[in-house]
Length: 77
Image 1 (cartoon, rainbow, N blue to C red):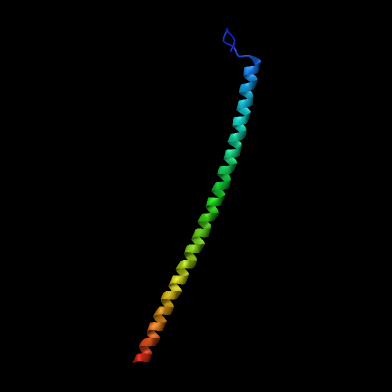
Image 2 (tube, rainbow, N blue to C red):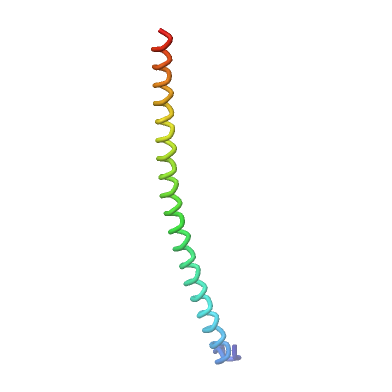
């Protein structure tokens, strides 16, 4: 800064360069956040599918266990 309180061209140029770098970094970070958000959505979808499969497998297991129990009860009598 000059004695009269104004900025030199060099200082203004350095500030503008810094501003451009900050804008570029901000744009990169925004892109990264969008990618992470998309990955999070995919993980949620995969989790829901897995949860459905596990529930189905558990239901089938309970059903088979019940059928085996009924068959054993029928055979024993």
